[in-house]
Length: 103
Image 1: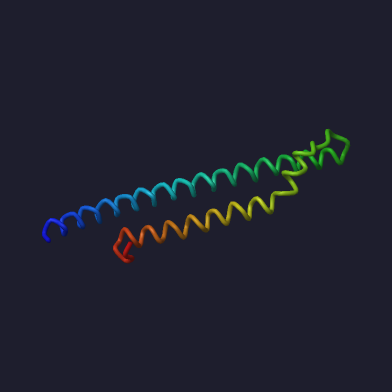
Image 2: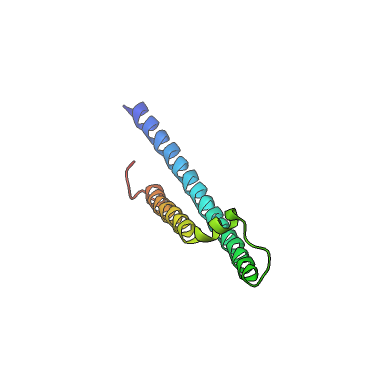
């Protein structure tokens, strides 16, 4: 009985450490997504400037560049969904680490 209690306590400690590591990982993922989203917006802004210049007789956008401009709103929504999902997972993980939820 005492051995089982000690094993359970050790397993609980290991589980808690796993969740803590997972929370840190998800926070890093969120930071990376935010950075990627910022870079993507800047890239598309440059393409929009190129499009404006093309309308004035400059070099036209390639079909791939046009597609990137057209997909901006959809792609940003997808980035935001990923961030929301990570925020929910981070909050749940923090609750588990703090002992508010049982695994």
